[in-house]
Length: 147
Figure 1 (cartoon, rainbow, N blue to C red):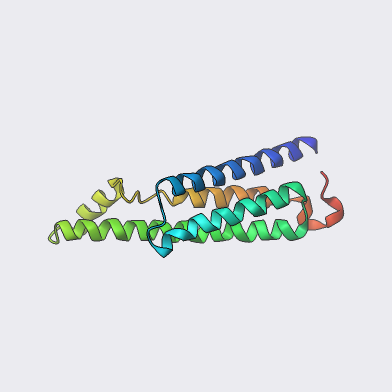
Figure 2: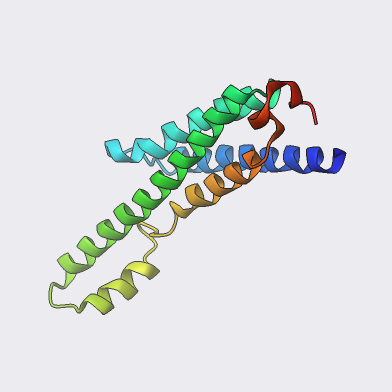
């Protein structure tokens, strides 16, 4: 059982560093020009608090909050990809409205601004967080928290 506990701690640490690094990057690139751009910053800030809370004092309650937060990551990541795609597509069509859909799609997927798949990091981190919580002892009963 100690191996499982070590793996869980490593997954939680990877989640924490992934969320922290991604949030710092968003702040450095000033990803807060529009209200919708605040969503990942606020969500990741909240996630850091929840991860620390759970890491320091694991319980069924904060594990559930962590799992819900990771589900929100999946939603925000998906919405972010759609928003990035739409923004890049609108820009391409403004440049040349006569372009074919396929041509615009290819250009959008190669665009550096906004990077269409960048919000996918939220999907990855959300999955890591959900994997961490899967079968976690805290989910069963509070008396089993210590592995």
